[in-house]
Length: 66
Image 1: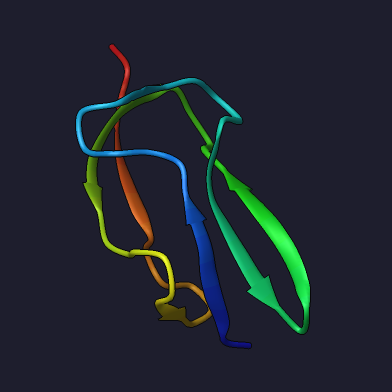
Image 2 (image 1 turned 120 degrees about the vertical axis):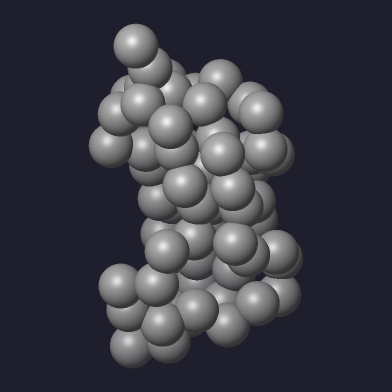
């Protein structure tokens, strides 16, 4: 189901912790916070506020912490 990006809470180079919120997506008038599966550094942000996204689309890439 497609959704719309409502917030991007990270930038390339940011250090993020495990389960840290990085994006908010709205689908069917419900907002869902998306959190990181691991701690690391944001290496790429593929979306911006207002973008439409699809299921399984990569939104943010994270280089795992060492």
